[in-house]
Image 1 (cartoon, helix red, strand yellow):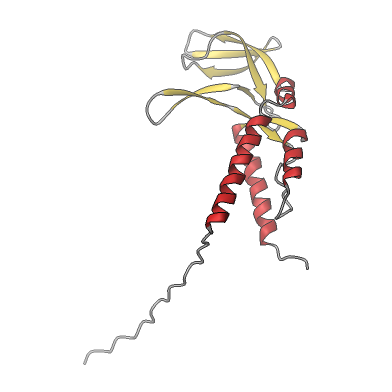
Image 2 (image 1 turned 180 degrees about the horizontal axis):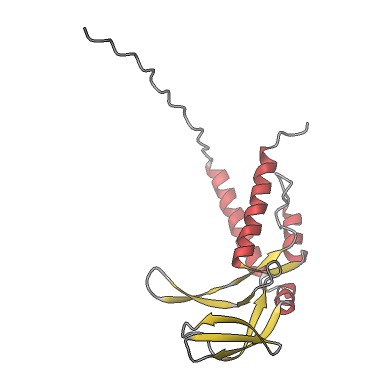
Length: 183
């Protein structure tokens, strides 16, 4: 005699909450993104930006060793040997020191895009020491944002340090949002 099969309970699908924004909310979000982009673009021309870059500027001498490598000298001492990609010119060059890891980076670097073409990108990023968007506020006002954008001290970071710092700030903001309100 065959044993009867046990009834398996059906999985109940839980509906995900979908946030549907009204047209006015979408327009407001688009306007906010537009204004932030314009403010960021304007801040790139602000004199303290150049001061932060000038503060971390280092003069180096690039010399080919004839074996496919470039030797980088600063203050008369060899500090790094890199592979010659055929695009880095020998002679006096400028590099920038990251304020966190203290490594030196060229301002622009070459990379091979997915299209197979070589492109230039920045190897360093300017960062506000005090974030423009506060870490501990759910609602912020434009006056605070603009003041922080243009008056907050800046630091020059390599891409790796900048992305690490940004992810830590975003995690802190997310943690603050998850906290129960103290009312």
